[in-house]
Length: 417
Image (tube, rainbow, N blue to C red; front, side, top):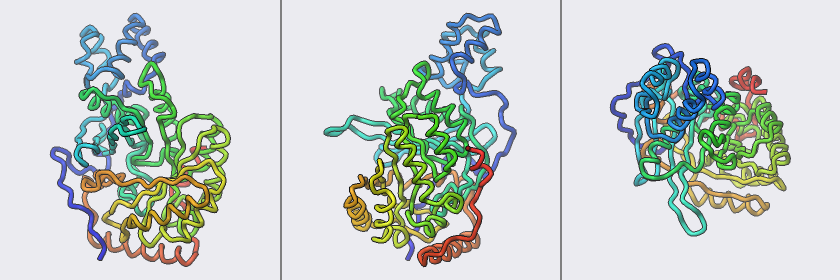
């Protein structure tokens, strides 16, 4: 019998919002502005440059959540700022802790009613490793890629996030940490959405995170994940960034990856890995490959051997993550002994492998699960059709048959180039 996902208690206060329910607030988020832009705004109003620095300090180092609370500024300037900008683009946020407080899943409502998610994970200090606080953030509201094991795909694609909407997820988490005397140490773009389909805004957000005048996080403490948007990977390589590139690989065999990562129908796995290999060569940074391990689907000896052959000799690291249960799939996560056997076969080829254990499974911490909850559960008939389709597709893939369906969101993906 297929295991059922844990029952989720609805958040208080937030109502289902499967799509935008009102016009977006036209004011830009202040966190998306650089020091130069704020200084120019102040100069246009005859204000001295130090006022812009005070705003930056309040936005990035203060604990305020509204311009009215920035008491270092005169009331008249606070009013002008509030008229021109949003101090916070996250209209509402609710946080659900789990794992004894080691994981905090946040659902954020944007000004137009859309929901996005972020996850803050705490790693206590241990021998040979310092304390870490890692935030996983979203780059889009929903996602167009449609990986069948991902709850975000159930929501579909709504829109790209603005740079400030990306950054305010970080600011919200940092304010929570600051209250406990702690600081965010790592940011990973592995939440809702495909970052390389919103690459301009993602790069703006990374610039702000890396900017000493704003958040001041070192580039090597930032990771950007992609399901395989090859033009976007090549564009990143040309820019030469020092942050970590992560590839949501999930399968090394094309027939299976066609099902698990539908963009593979446009950019096959060999092309994705070749682009990642070029990135590693240009930056000197090893590429991380993520595999969500699904029992009986991509966890076989043949899959391990195919992965080892694909990555042999590359500057690469593999993360194996047992799948979080998602309501509309018939699959379950691979048992740990199976994952360990898979890891051993890949390590035998000289490739570094880490087994990652899921955080927050009792609160649906897989990407998109809580937002999908708020969007309302699909009907049993819809779930049944999805499951039947996934079973048929995966059975064909395991027979070695390539998918004949078109890749999703091709125009948006090509626009990343």
